[in-house]
Amino acid sequence: MTDYPDVATRSQSPAEANGGASGPALPVIVVARDALHAPDRIADHFSGQATIRREDISSPEKMRGATATADAVVVALHRLTAELIDAMDGRVRVIGRMGVGTDTVNLDAAAARGITVFNEPTFGVQEVASHAVAMLLALQRKLVPSDRYVRDGWRGGFALGPMKPMDEIVVGVIGCGRIGRAVAQQLIPIAGRVLVYDPAVDDVPLTAVRVGQLDDLLARSDAVTLHVPLTPGTSRLLGHRELSLLPRGAIVVNVSRGGQIDEAALAELLMAGALSGAGLDVFETEPLPPDSPLLLTPNTILSPHCAGYSDRAAWRLGAWTVGDAIEWLNTGRLHHGSVVVAGSR
Image (cartoon, rainbow, N blue to C red):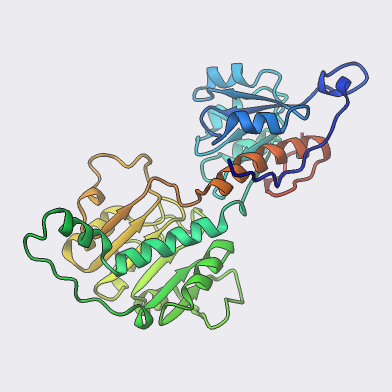
């Protein structure tokens, strides 16, 4: 197994490790069941620093039992509603979100309880960026229908065109944070032009063009890729009106958060041929319902919220989040993550 030990460990005395009288008891970290990619390895890595318990926290009753005597809770895609947060033991001081987005955690409820919430925005930047670019390239080159045509015995009609060469297409990048910037940097050498829209930033990667209005970017882009957090302001950011601004035959990629695209409108425009393809790693409802119209749309690539995955990123995601929970409990600081809600406990 490849080793990715880029997580600090702190040696402790036997008394500390045992929670003896001459040292403080170890902090207790409750990790949502199935959240960790390599739970035994992470438990070994932090042996002597914390007691790590993997628990079912899917209901208030289970949360109460799971967090008894716990100091921290770590989750991945598990939803922490206000009801679940209110059911946490009064000792819980911090919640670690394994990932970038925090829309799955009721931040208001955490703040009301005085619980700190942090995320890990840097664990898999290149993985997510390359996933978006891979989807865009596959859609532009129509690899999915090409593969299907070969598997079907080269039977029936198959039209590759219209298909612009990559060095002529204009790609619009919506959001220029860490991941959006990485996507733009990967695309600059291969796309004709890269446009960037993000009202929160002033600078964009070299040779990319900053666009001041979203509508302008959409009207000029042969492909768009989303890289913004899910907030009330970005919910349904691309609705039917916005998607209709794209040139005919444009491509849409979303590896950011579900709920930012009107999925029914996207499916409608794909079926009508107004858009030529879509690549989606995230959905408004996950798992994607079996009656979703997106399952029937042409030249569409769907992946199960896995854009951030690689062996290294999976290790980092678990180890950084658990390690930051321990560090925050011990020192009030984080090695890798960012505080989203500053609690009072």
